[in-house]
Length: 528
Ligand code: FE
Ligand code: CA
Image 1: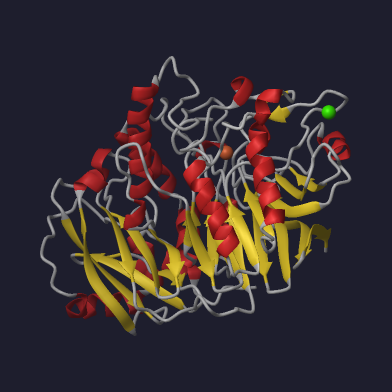
Image 2: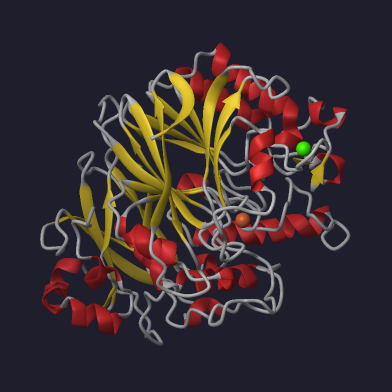
């Protein structure tokens, strides 16, 4: 379906293009200077400050968070900003030309937070589109579109959203985001690996080079976000809908677990927690998150719940910050009694109690467990040997069984697990007992592929047919890049696996490789 909203004119964050593409609006906005209020603290800037675009997120029935960060020179330390605080005006309008302004205010961008702003707008109407814009001095940002959630007691007819993950910059072009920016989704969900902390490789795609060292300091992480955020396709996808984000490992360090780095010899606990604090701060500075999520040193509360009336609840998990170390040294390992260690956890006790409580109390028709790593116990090794991913739920078998049993025992309505991390598409029935392949399915799992990570793919891998044959609860596999688009109604959940056949060149088309449906009350993926 075409967008209802002139994307190109309003979402391109280059000022010259913006002014050229929306002259009448820009002129009106500049003439309407008086309507923008009278904030004063505006030191001279070294250039257009909105080079990183804008974003909105975490919608409630009466508002959302608006985000931007001032960075006239985005790839330089401090973003080319002076150390002083800067007043940033914002406006929310009920029309795309920003003529009917319904709220406005001024936020303060401070150097301590990389001159980012996080505006928590309240008091708006539920379940409708809004448009927003920032201004510093005479510099105006592009216009973003966002949407409030439906009222808590409403049962909306449908929710349309897409979920994405894993956007390694050096692995390809964000063509999937170009396509996503042209779709009409009420919300976009990100399951982590928004950045990759690693260094450049010789096989990086031309024009997609990253620095030659790994991120370890606050400045490193800030510059990495700046690089990613300068991508026009990513900016366009942020500008069309609110996002709900959670992180995985690469926002900090590959396969980290709690306070444990993958290479504890290089980052012993204390050094790793300093690194984690820097990474979490940079994450907060670059995402549309609420004050409730502000980092405190190496800690940042990111698990939370977003509700779309009584239609769907997103139980957003953080399976990195509180997890215990991967058993058996991580990687892919055969099954072992270590996987049933009751102390092994991905969620931690508090988050698990919060999740169970929220699932028991949920009034939603559909409960989306919005998280990072694959939950189905997939044997990744063709032939009689069994290899399981220790970084995934399979490495935390005790807790995985506990959660699946809870879905059943607490009569959780329509649990659908959303996963990322492994850079390929899977559709899995979550059966009650993976040692008994005939056991009934208690939930379903949609695993979305990467935006770019691992580069050009293909529909299959060398061993995917054999893996499918050994794991009959897997209904679909695909190894291309892309995202999963969902349409949720009270009776059905429909998922389209949408892919781009290549990312090493620009301009790939968007293909729908498979469509699955789940009927309410029947936890089973049906090919549509
Ligand atoms: Fe990834
Ligand atoms: Ca096997």
